[in-house]
Length: 427
Image (cartoon, rainbow, N blue to C red; front, side):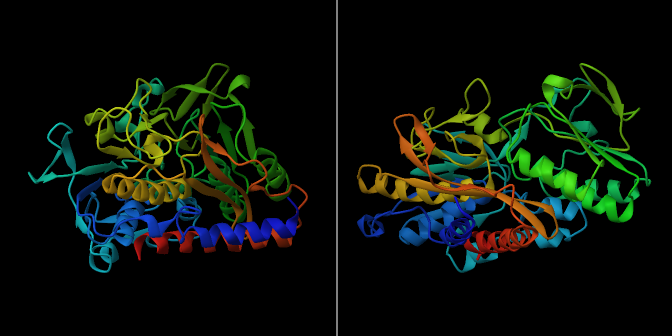
């Protein structure tokens, strides 16, 4: 893909986030069908699905259950960790969904799902019936995936993989760290939620350290042997942060197998490392309510019909976002947003008694390597007999040879994408 076409494609992706799934015959959807649809989880997937269900058919009663009164986004949380933005910059409110879009937003925690009676129970004792249920719970952690590490240690060695208090905690630890300290970032194996990307995180932390604590080092101890946009990241590290970031792949002793929080050490198969700040990111699984509702497989993720996102485990239940197994689509906010729109259309088709539509999806993952320097990968997806696959020739990756002007332009696209997608969902 040449530079001009790539720019046009990225602009198209930004605009497409507000348009929904590609090539859908909205006129074919009935706006008269009445039903109760309950959505559990108000992140990129669930909030999108709620808004677009109402948009496509205002007669459907949509209830969104989200335990938090505000949503702090993982995308752009790395900018908070690096001191570029404040936490309120990535904090979204549900006010417009409730008022402007006539969605019943309930701030409560779901404790039980009775799929036989089609009944939801919340912590406060509410019971809500549904005709269709959408579960978009995001991720939880496999706490026993690293010896010596459990949930009690997240204040000592924050994961910062759920945005909010953990984001601010990691930021505060960096500020308190001495000049000449070592930051250890330990990413998990696949699959995992991304963004926030550990390699973007390392980049932006490096920018902060270069300006404020230039004698410091960043050590990435990775469970994987490769990662998305790897040549682009590594070239940028050499250019912008020479000798500051060291990446060790899993096959060369990078996989962390043990930690000692008191000594602030992590151990791999080859060595033990001391860190002043340790960002330990555990292995992941579908959010807890997906397990409670019986929606997961033996690996902790939710198998779905990848055309409709209907659960393969329970009837009248759909799963979208990070928790579901969505073929070649990544576990990203943009992917969840795209899935939410497709799921909304497929639910309405189902309620209308129609066959599922042929869907397509879009995703782009921007990464800031510095405040004014970005790279990206983009893809269009379609459904096939093998599930969701990428469309050959669609999308692409930032060119390695791009000049600084294009990197700066992509940084502007990154910010534009964030404002576009959060506005699309929450306004």
